[in-house]
Length: 106
Image 1 (spheres, rainbow, N blue to C red):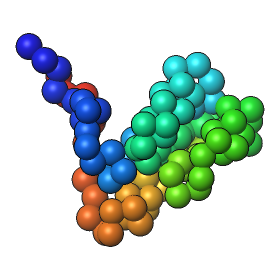
Image 2: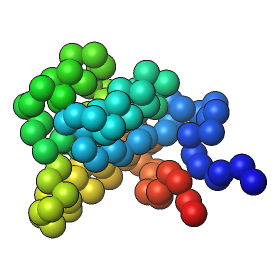
Image 3: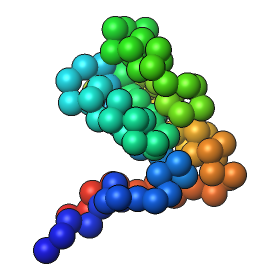
């Protein structure tokens, strides 16, 4: 059975937004870079928004295509602020209609 997820050769990539945590380095950074290269709009959650990984993403992609947002997943307030920034970005990107859902459903 084929996995059901939104990244599966999506022809509407420029209208989709990926919100990814842990974009300071490693897998999160790679996923944010990969998604933006494929044409998705990306919200990159970084613990250090002025750190090396965040600067790398900002340097390689335009602000309307990739947005770096502070995110500390151990802090409820930070997660809530990330959620609000994500909603704001979605509203601006999709003309006010947005839907938050996980990319991979099990």
